[in-house]
Length: 378
Image (cartoon, rainbow, N blue to C red; front, side, top):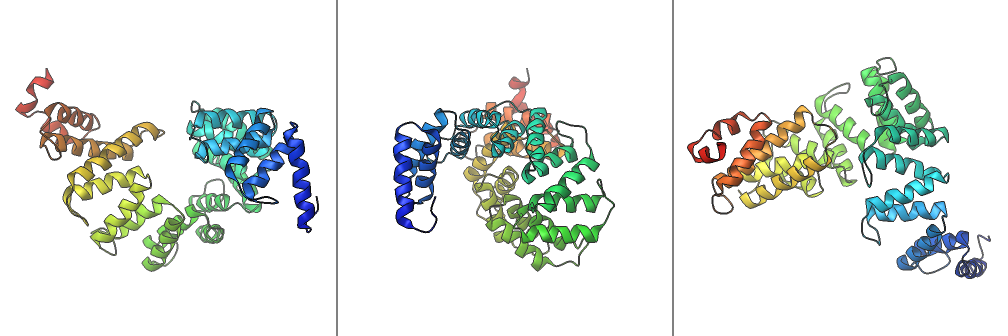
């Protein structure tokens, strides 16, 4: 295909479009790609979707992969994880290497299918065998955390090194953590810091957050809160909600830069972006008027959303998760018991206090013994 002559490119596009209309799946994929990118023809998302779908229906794996991405992200089509999974699986079974990782991610996270770490590992391995650095890094993480395989730090470090050598920022970050902890490699904080900085240079948000935390705590580097703030803000600008949370913590009354307004602002940004930990903390701030006006309705909204998301998405309960669940359910009980957003509702108050008590909240256990709840304890 000519690269420089615009007329030749347009003619080639028209030739491929004629073939696409006759049912050639490669030509259909080519035409779809042109409409999607605006190369040789005016950009048209609807036309791109039409031709990707036609090629995918004929089993063209690259088209199936691209269409799956659209379904998973809800771009131009209603979000449908199950359809995305079906297409990723079909593409992967035909040898489409980019689909290996997405299929593994679907199994790992339970998106469109039942969560299955073993199958996730299987597909990550296929991608790693093809030399895909993202699959190598993700497979390394499975060995690092012991998901779907026996924990093996030597293997995780080997995979992180291989992916890092190919330029993976995520792998550089995980290799840095390995050096900090001595997992599969000798403990070497200086090397860990150097690798973290390399990952930051590749715009890896996990590395930005890690390096910021090192500066905030003065661990392995000289304490520098200003550098920490700049790095957290940089990661937050790229959408990292955990960095938004950590920024908020710097502005709490116990933090190095107390500022209730900034604290709530960052918790709110993280919560509104879907971070369930931030939803809980934003809800608490709204209950007590910390950095914002007291707003029980807003607190109830945050707690309810956090409870729904935690219940649906957290992988394995841990002490921190259960503590947060106990806090949000306790406050939902308080809102119902004292009628803070509507009439007093003992039935729902009893339900929420019971959930909180089950998770170990002592105040909820005490409140449940109140005479108001005698009929519900029977």
